[in-house]
Length: 215
Ligand code: DX5
Ligand code: ZN
Image 1 (cartoon, helix red, strand yellow):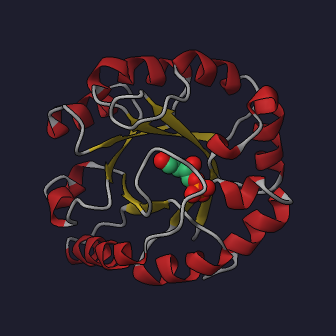
Image 2 (cartoon, rainbow, N blue to C red):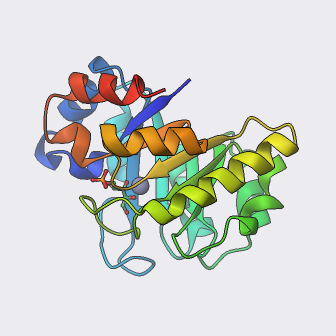
């Protein structure tokens, strides 16, 4: 089943709670929350207190994407704030195995994300221990960028490795996802689609259902 995770980075932050409720009504499966620290990526977005406030507005799964240099330091705060899935970058300054263990010890699902230049093989040894791999299809840091076609082979390689190991790990894609690019990422093996601009720039229900039917 294809799952849709609208990225609140593209929402109207002055109406964040209502935007989240609208995503739920539009049939989204989860809410993608982009956390940027101005160090791992050049942009700064939001922290755990905002996630905690938002938790009161919706029952949607909170899919927290940490684009921060020191994930270990902040993971407990995001777990406490109500995150259901926490994804961190394999390129950040942390011990990957220990970071996965910390997330799971807090009772939260764990995801590992790869920037466009990071090869698929880097995540293979962690596959048995994680719930999701996030393949970035743009350089992390900003919404509204163009989809990078050259990431399709990475999605395929990770899906093949999961199949080989008998794992039904979620493969999430993030960046430049529209009804057009959704076709090729799903074909390559992705099953969780993050979409920011595409969902928030028009009618959310139409956008979410058009992404879901691309299977
Ligand atoms: C980029 C973020 C994305 C972003 C996607 O660093 O991780 O989640 O919001 O935005 P669109 O869908 O507009 O490319
Ligand atoms: Zn993201």
